Length: 210
Image (cartoon, rainbow, N blue to C red; front, side):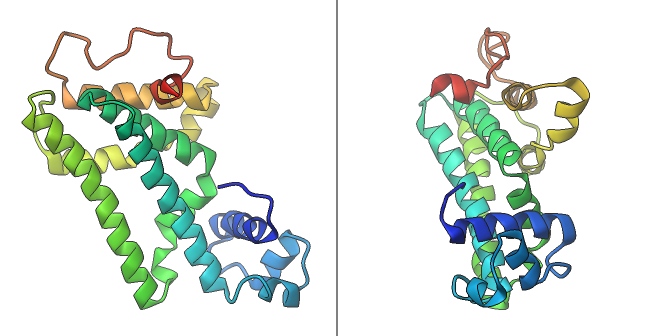
């Protein structure tokens, strides 16, 4: 998500401003000032503030979807797929907190057509978590009382900033612990302790698999 182009700098600066001040509380002049541009030069790179918002939201969704895909593709083991998907999500959110905050809070500012596209993408992303849990349940690897309640819980994981500051944990350690939490929620049905790795949680499972 990082980049050296001026356009990417504009998107990243706008993400921080929207996260801190809100979409309505940020002007195009604010964005231009943040990247050292005059307003006319900014408009040469982006058409409108709404276009910048769409770019931020698309980048956040692209990152979340790709993180999940890479995690699931890394192993045929459904238990490891879940653990790695949760860890990858938490790591991505920790690395791009402003993009995630804008995705969570500012979608309603999009115009109707792009808002509909984004809403559909979010639904597809949520459905992919549902499919992963259902696959684990169908294969007998997971025991879950309510898949419909579990998925929102998994999606809410990643508010790691408080844990990091309070416990002085690295991002990888926070991701590891959220992965552990996810495995406890699905009660892996194999050998006792199957859901936990036997390694030091100094790095997340997804980072160890790279």
